[in-house]
Image (cartoon, rainbow, N blue to C red; front, side):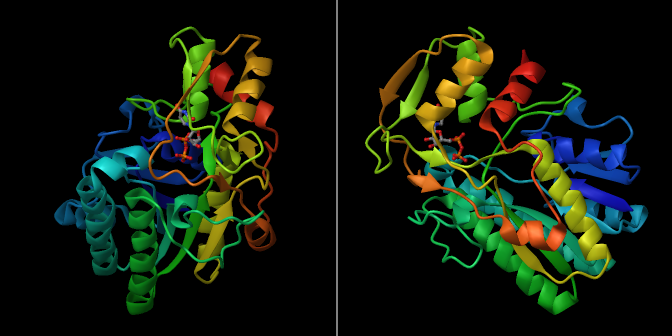
Length: 321
Ligand code: UDP
């Protein structure tokens, strides 16, 4: 198949591009390199520099490349930043995706795999989150991703496009080659930051609040390996090409780890001491998010290959240091 990957120079996008190419597919990438890295784009992918909100560019690419479908990663994705700069999130995530969808309609592209997030759920206090739970995002990042899901669904209804939306839980880890891995500037995610402390790049890790209603007081998240996510995207595109109907799936491991447990696991994996300092809660953070991914397993035959937190952290550690 031939796929256009938006945000293919970003963390999850670049790993998905590697997998697509390893499996023999043709890949076209469009990325504005605001948060992505050109050197992370697989050399065999065709690269277009630009913005998905640029209608003439998107129509031009889609007319030329005649892809079977799009995998749409391009978006801003930081909870904290979205709280202080909501405008940036509405513009880049919602408005730009709207333009991209219009270009898809113009060019008759009928299949879309969309990178959504568990942040669409908000603060749901249940042991396992299933896809039919109510969605009440607690930050503009989650709110814009939910709006994108809804836009995509309405667009699909109007233009006969089918889609899969993936609500990711907390992604970490790297490609086994070590050639690509998570690198954000500035880095805000827990696992890469903890590893920076282990590597001596950073003095300590700030724990954002230890007064949550969880066993050790720190936030609980469900961590999933980036290559497990990549596999799900390729399976979803095949599912759509085979005529599958539009669906929304959670992607997680079904097990939660607190911030303190992640730090302990990282100490074990790296053999280094990791200094911590408890600071204020980060605005917009729900206490606990754990996925039920049963629907993805049943529908797409998707089974995570990195179920252990140590294996996920080890993969990130080996690639980055
Ligand atoms: N976190 C933390 N210190 C940090 C970065 C993150 O305590 O320096 C916490 C954060 O509050 C959340 C969890 O770690 O509970 C995962 O945060 P991350 O930013 O990695 O992912 P998110 O849950 O925002 O998608």
